[in-house]
Amino acid sequence: MTFNIEGIVGALRSSRGTVARKVGSDGRVLDLPSPRDLADVVSGLTSALFPRRFGGARGASNGSLDYFVGNALARALDVLHGQVVRELGFTASLSSQGLVDATQTAQVIVQEFADGLPGILDVLYDDIRAAYDGDPSAKSQDEVLLSFPGVKALIHHRLAHALYKLDVPIIARIIAEHSHSATGIDIHPGAEIGGSFFIDHGTGVVIGETAVIGERVRLYQAVTLGAKRFSVDETGALVKGLPRHPIVEDDVVIYAGATILGRVTIGRGSVIGGNVWLMRSVPPNSNIVQAHARSDTFDGGAGI
Image (tube, rainbow, N blue to C red; front, top):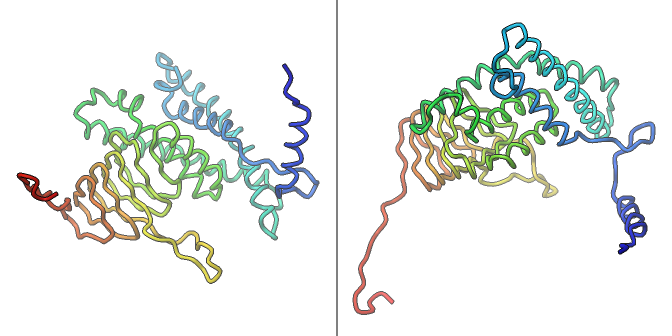
């Protein structure tokens, strides 16, 4: 059985030729970061951060554990460097200023990112403890680390956010979307999230780019911290980068299905009930719930 592969390949080549592509000064089509390679980077970094749980180094001595961590880091950071070079080359092609040395700039970015890994691990330990303390079904912190989708999403987010702040947003977004597809939790890498953060269950949670979340905050499934509206310029194009997502202060709990939109502030210690729709700020220690449901009884066809 034949399928005219040659003709289809030619037609696909023709279609690709009609799409504008970014080309480097040497005439080559510029590569973008690879989602597959970045998934490997995150896997390698996770092994380095938690070598006894994700690296398979359970019985290793401290010396051999350090050797394992060093190898895992070296491999992951080397691949990450290549991906950063790709992004820098692509973004430079969008600017009239260009880029002098993508390789050297990438080296600086990846080194700064690597230097921040111990701090990221410290925050992740706080997140794991918060999940264990906040879920009566959790039997150990190891169970939380290995099986809770909220923790998986936070591992990705803490890494992606560090890269986002180092001005490689494409790589950061790819890492975030890899986590989204695995957990159902959608956190933009630009979101600022404090320590001891716990997402329980998690499916359907959405946290927007300019959201700011304080310490010891807990969210349940299907919570949205989103934008109410998008500003446009005189041409009608969206104005990007403006603060448009909520600020959630310390020690707030937001229950399942709640939707909070716009640059509003949820005051410290507040509780937002399930399925609440909120587009205004609330003061500290507020308790926001839905209006009580009304129940009417109709007899003999009344009310039809």
